[in-house]
Image (cartoon, rainbow, N blue to C red):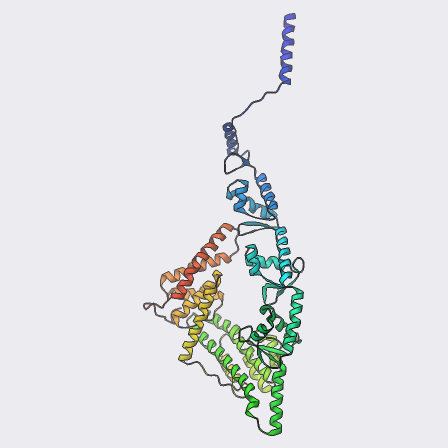
Length: 527
């Protein structure tokens, strides 16, 4: 009995020691890998392998790593760099980053980079500092500094105007910004300089003499004229040949000539050199623009009825409207009716308001010309413009271009397209200019068409040019459309952008060197 009790006590002591002791069981690295692999297969756990295969991350841990690295790098980091830093495959980082973006409204994916609103606020602060150092800054300059897309930066800066960025955007160019003090200072200088002018003067001379910033100059002058703070008008829009004409000049010239004639019954030749020269300059400008309109109109006949109608409407809304504005502005100066602003920026209402200030014999023909711009074609425009330019109103002789003049106009227009093409860096613009150039080379007709007509022009060229030329244009067009189509696939967008840049030189080369094939003659009946 006592022996049994001793055995019991011994077992109890052994049990107590077993309870108090710790047993260490060690698994090999291979065992661990096999266990984790099995748990993954059974979908009991979800982990992500590191690139060296020695560690695992849970999705939540990967998300935390992404957030931490984004903070460490100041709110901007490339996904490729992020994948290398964390040590996992790029695809995992990209997937988790996109999930992160869906839950974070203050973070963006731009060209494969995560960018936070904090980073953009800091960027805006630096832009504001640079802006106040020089008074003016453009999106192109900001793009070079921060290596981000221009459209994205434009939105970023505009969203922070008045809060972080203290300045204002150019009313005619949303990608240029000025400080308020910079604008005020130059507005006073520009107003003072132009107020002292008593005769017509080229704007380029004024800008160069006073060293005015060109973009701001045009914006300020147009605003001053519109607000009635500057008595004058601009002829020629924002071109190199633009002229500022003070109201006092036209008024004083007319008053002097009328007074002299009433008192003496005749006019001296010298009294009418400058008025005659001004008249000749306008006549030349009107003739040139009208010649272009006639030649652009001729090219529309090569297209289908529907496309032709659209092209004619575009011609009426652009160049024909420009010509009418120039005519109204000229007559306003001749008759002492002040134009409200630069002729190129007349609204329909402003143009009609000026027209209604003329006497009945001038007003009615101008109203007909004004109304012709709303037609579906140029049938009403041509007789209306001939009447206004003719005797009794503008008193001008405007001749239609002969073959020699047409060849010169075509050559000048081709040279203009070649210059635009060589300077083009945007794929859409490059394609636009290239198809216009190929169209002109093939048809010997120059075409006035905006970017939306590019697909129609390519369709027309399909049956006119060699297949390899058409295929290049059509393929490039597809890539341009894909680039402009919103997409969440950043990798595809980068591939498209790379391809567009690589093929741009080929597009330019084909457009510049293209010659009409002898086996592909233009047939106006082919639509």
